[in-house]
Image (cartoon, rainbow, N blue to C red; front, side):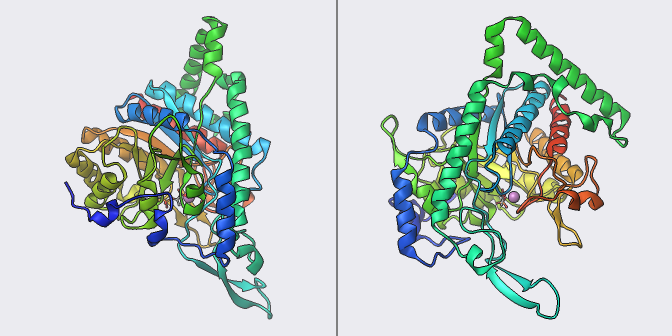
Length: 463
Ligand code: PEP
Ligand code: CO
């Protein structure tokens, strides 16, 4: 077992993180306004409840044993502007459709977790951004402003007023998360009967000229089989259809803004301990997972399942220490290790991490995020990702876990239900990217790319 200094294990409170250095710290000019926003958030009802959090933990514990599979996905940066019925509906729709394809391939129930209802805080590679203002011409001068840290902190426009971190955005973010979640809950309760019929899905990507014939045939066969299975279920009687169309969604976001998380963290009557009730599943980002930092300090004290992003530089002993601090009792369903090492390095890096966890005998759910290690910048400055690299990282992850007798228990995607042009492949090339590049942060798979990804994963999982 690794040794950890006692300072990481001292007394905890929802505010003890304030004593620790916070990576990605965003400076608010007015501390009183921060406390006022925190006070307001403390008085407001929680967004989720502890029963749901415990249920998710239970489902995740089954995924650790290979009995379920996690599908986590949504925007890189959710925005306040996108809190609209059509956008939320299409996000739910793509996650649901992908999950049905994955059920078919994996023969396992799928746990659906959205990056939504609070994915408003973004870590950035630099605290400030420089641009020429105006963009060109003889008057152009370089200007440096705080980077855009997501709608929970500031606004994206490149003006001093918009970029000034505003604590009231925590309350606005909470309200939009509540509106989003309310709508998702109503959609989930109302049933998605028509979505269960693949014959009504937009499967236009089957017709792509460059799609190899064998793959096209396989997609068609999968779709036919899914339709038949669902019609069979329906033929068994109305009650089955109802059960089938009632779907469960959980929420997740990066727990970046600890004032926001802490203000919604509370004890509940039914269980011991504190719950962070902004979301079911918070995760700690690659840039904020320092063992002695504020984020690990905060999340070690809450009962929620916790995701930890692991980039290519993660070391096995570091991972062991994080597991020990965040899950000292080795509780099942508690820790998700979300590896995002990149397709190019996955074969080299992933086995060391997986073996390390096995050696320590830790219970974790291994998840593959094939997005964040595969970002590339084009000469135009635009960020993109290739469908093929994304798929390759997941396939390598399956192979590595299989070879080591471990389980890849889930996947984590940045995707949208909209017809955006941000990732290359699956029918899009570099020259298509400016047609509808809408992300404020990282490039997402669009509807067709995401659905095709699900078909490809289902194919891999049915082996
Ligand atoms: C993200 O999930 O959007 C993100 C910033 O991830 P990471 O911490 O893995 O870079
Ligand atoms: Co991202």
